[in-house]
Length: 126
Image 1: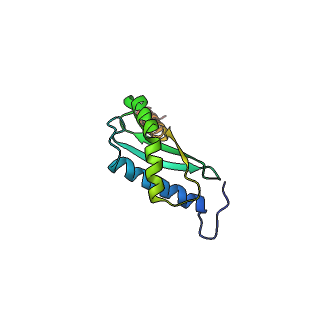
Image 2: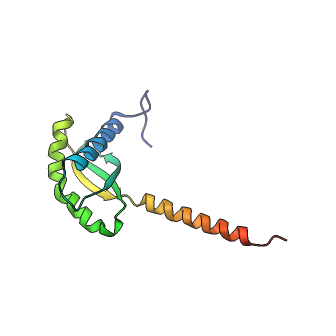
Image 3: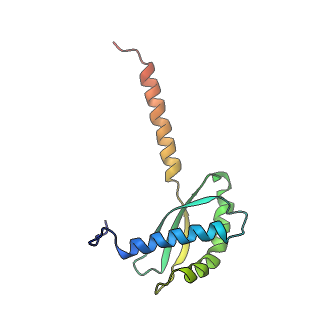
């Protein structure tokens, strides 16, 4: 776990959140690739030297995931350049897009819990 400063967040956490917000805005307003469509950026993890950023995303169109990943990979240079115009940091990170399956996992766990509760509700008590 990261050591937190007096305000609770390290500078890298603030930079990562700013990168996430600006990338989300760029994807929504500037990116014209139809493959990308509706995605949500869930988080950004920066390396300590800010050289690389893992950008986690999710989509409602998981069946088109390969096309979405290809579109994001192709747009990474453009997004990095535009990000550099918005954020002024010493090293602009190389962007690596990673699909975040945690929402799907959470939904499947919720469904399993609901199934288990439904079965236990049907079981006769002694």
